[in-house]
Image (tube, rainbow, N blue to C red; front, side):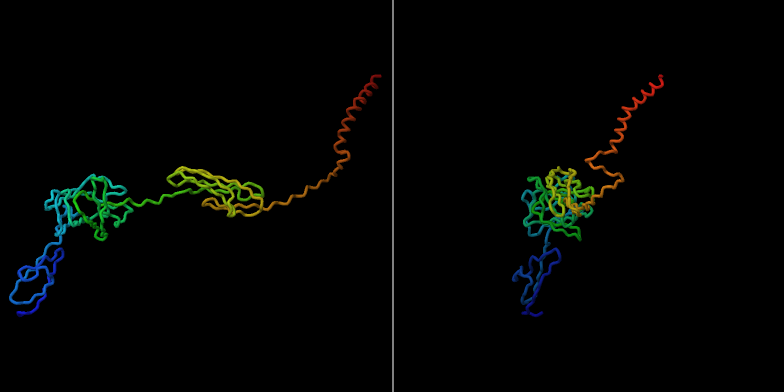
Length: 328
């Protein structure tokens, strides 16, 4: 390389470091990178680097706090922060509608602040995640003693590495929280069972009884109109009020005079009954006894009566006369 040549020099920082400037030559701009210079003599340049952040880690390796080197990190006494301590908390207050996945930690000195925020990294145990909760739903939260509640942070989840990260602006009590597992949907309204139609076949004008057991599956008292439909038309309605979990039997009685098959609809239940054709009236049975006209004497009835009268009058006379004859 000769005097007067132009040279481009670039400083490349290793991972976790950043370029802070050049040193060794007072005539160059120490912040420019890459740097173009004109060689005028033997020159010595040094590229200076610094850590991107200062990191403090817990003894179990689960937590770490990374503080950007350009950040202002102060302890609770507004002095430069020189250390972070991690202490496991055995009985933190439970979160509202959630659970603590890992043991909570107190990060001290309490009240230390970061501007801009530091980064809290947390390696979680998947076996500690409640059943029914996805890893993507995990969050890092801190406990607000003044408000008496957990405050969720803007957390990022790496399910492949099982790591959570979140920005923090101060040191206090932190924990990994999981929402409550989703519960099965609660059934609401009335449900039916034990649906019956009796009898299924009737003659015209005969009654058909239709009944169903109705249960209130909701968590509150409910009132519902129970409508019976026959062939799609509303036949009858009952208003039923049931407390949470209560049940009752609802019964309807209907009569149909036309021969047909009738479709029954009652809430979620369906069925049918049949009204059969009316049978023809049978002819009266024939008799070998000749009927006597109503205007004449019924001798079949009168003959025994007259015989009894005759015997009652003349039989005593005949007996007396025979007795008198033998008395001679």
